[in-house]
Length: 105
Image (tube, rainbow, N blue to C red):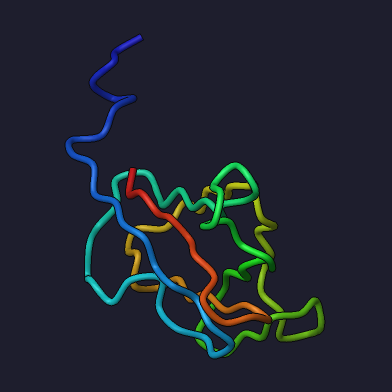
């Protein structure tokens, strides 16, 4: 196995506060090599864990499982999306002040 083909050149990461209106995961026009890993903190983060899922999708999504609903990340879970640019991902929740961590891979 050629390890150079399995690794990324650099890591970029951050946290986003999510509310009840869809917003970009990050407004930065950063390019990923493999995609974006996201985590929704749960009870393992005392005082910082989310009380509601964070939904991931496009700019016109809602925080439900209806026809415009995004894909939920429940507190304590993670999701990887193989996209090239982080600014193409949007997040929303049913509660204000929810957190989502992200890392470009």
